[in-house]
Image (cartoon, rainbow, N blue to C red; front, top):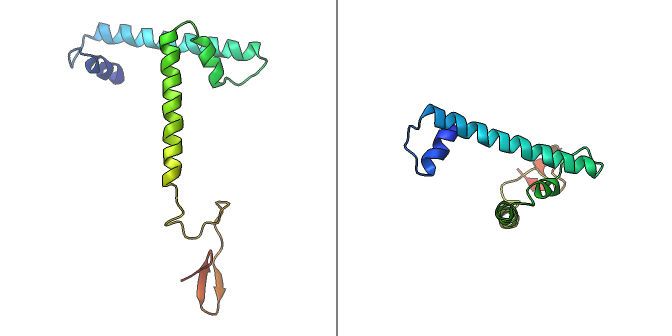
Amino acid sequence: MVPVTLLLHAYGDVSDPLPETVRVLDEIVTDFIIETCHKAAQAASVSKRQKVKLEDFKWAVRGDERMLGRIRELLVLDREMREARKGFDTQEGKVGLERGGRKRKAEDDEEGIRFAGINV
């Protein structure tokens, strides 16, 4: 229950809240997560799928515009971060890897050992 204590402190509570407060908040959060997951699973089963998708969670919280807006905002932020990471994804320092991501075996030739076309 330490994360709940930290959450309470982050939102302005004392650093050592009452155990009853921590227990009640933990119960409320746990019930909310379970109910939301059940609603999403129900949406998936109505769509005749066994796996729950992101769209099922959006459907489960569709009545709460604030929460749905926050979900959309986080999804946009996630997409932007993935795109930004692609800019930093270089092949620098990845000796021995081909484009397919498989390691190439070292080949002996007269000049020494070759890794992915680089003489060592």
